[in-house]
Image 1 (cartoon, one colour):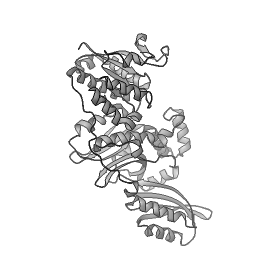
Image 2: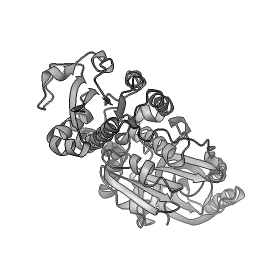
Image 3: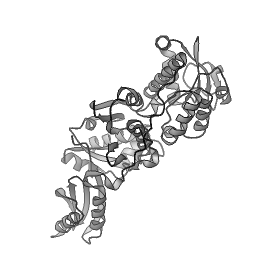
Image 4: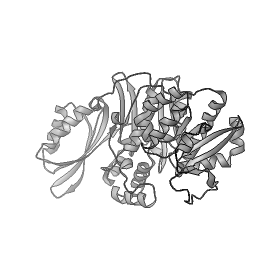
Length: 428
C-alpha cells in the first residue's frame, strides 16, 4: 500500500498533538510502519478557526460523512471526547471495517462492550492507549507484556488535577478551596471541576484498567467513588505526623471473594513508590503473580503526551492494515463478581471533634470495640473551648464494621462531629 489513509474526528488538544507528532516525525514513522501515514480529512466545527498549526485547509470538513462514508479511509481517529456523537461515529466506522483509535475514556469505560463487538463484526482494530494515563504506556503492557500474569492488584494516581492539588496542599499547608482556585487559574482544573475533584475521571480510567487486568467487564457504575472535596489542611498535617501522604487513588484488586474497584483519598506511607509522585504526574502500580511489582510513571494528560499515545495507536492500526491482521480486541471473557464495599478490609484514619471532658475517649473506644473495630492509636490534638479534636487510626478492619461503629459514635452526646474518614493503603 502506497499510503494508509486517516480520517480524524476532532482537532482539539489531543488531535493537534497526534497530528503534529506524525507530521514532524513522518520519515521515521513511515519507515517503522512500512507505509506512509496520510491524513486525508479532519472533522472540525469551524473551518476558519486558527489552530496554530501548519495545516492544509482542504483537509478540514464539517461533515462527518466525508470521513465515515469514504471507502478509501483505513483508520478513523476519534478525539471529540464525550459520548455523543462520538459513540455513533465510532460504531459506524468500526462496522464499516475502519480501524478506530480513540482517547475517549468516557466512551470506552461505559460502552467498551458495544465497541468491541462492532470491531469484531467489522474485522477492525480498536485501540485506546490514550484513554488512561496520557503518554504512559499501560493499556498495551496489560494486554501484551503482562498478559501471562494473573494481575492481582492495580493501584494508581490517574488524575493529574487532584494530584496537583494534593501536592500543593501538602507543600504549602493551604486548604482545599484556595488550591482549587489556583488550579483553575492555571488551567489544571475546569471551571466546573466535578469530574476531577469528585473522582469520576479517575473512576472511568480505573474501570478500563480493571476490565483489562482482570478479564471481566467493569463499568463506571461498578466503581465506588469518593473525591477530595473533604480533604483539609488538617488532614494533610496529621498524615505527615503519622508518616503518610495523601493521594487520590484508583484501587482494583482481584480477590477470591470478587473484584474490588474503588476510587477515594488514601493515606499511603512515604515508603510506597506512589508517595513521591507529585504535581500533574500520574503513576500506576501493578502487581502480578509472575512479574511481581511494577510501576508505570509519566505525564497523564496534555497535548503531546496523550498525542504520543494516539500516534502510536495509529501506527499499530496501520501495521495491521498492511498485514491484513487484527490486533487483540476484547479480553473480557470472565464474569467475576463485584466484592461489596462493606466487605473490603483497610486501616482507617478518623478525625472527630468531641467534648473535652473525662470519659469521652472511653465511650468512643467502647463504641468501636462493640462493632469489632480495633484501634491502633488515639491521639488528642487541638482544643477549641470545651471541645477537643481527636485522631484515631484503626487496625485493618472490615469497612462495614467501621461504618457501623461510626454510626454508633455519631449518636454519642459527647461527640460534636466526625470530620473525616480516610482509608490507609499501600503498606508494603
